[in-house]
Length: 115
Image 1 (cartoon, rainbow, N blue to C red):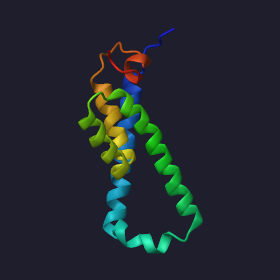
Image 2: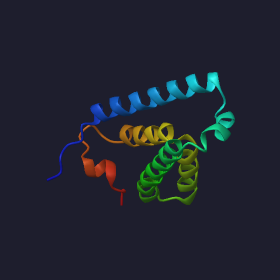
Image 3: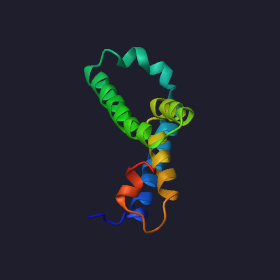
Image 4: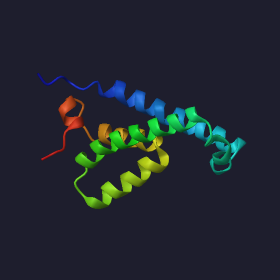
């Protein structure tokens, strides 16, 4: 059974993620550069574990992007964006996919590569 995609709900969710990530990133950047905190936090085991967890999630998401994208240039560009911007890039990618779909789209239309 191919269920209809709750497109509007997903758009609201990923816009909220994008706005939240931009807000927290800009707020943190105004306090201190990410490049200044590295030496202080590397010894912290939970920071390292959280970083590993985040990048494993980025790679997991990117496997789907690699599958969806057929051109090597877009695959490379999205890899760099996901690895550098994380959830900001991920939410933008999903929003692009959602806006390309018709209102009556199904989950398969979102998740599977077009033939």
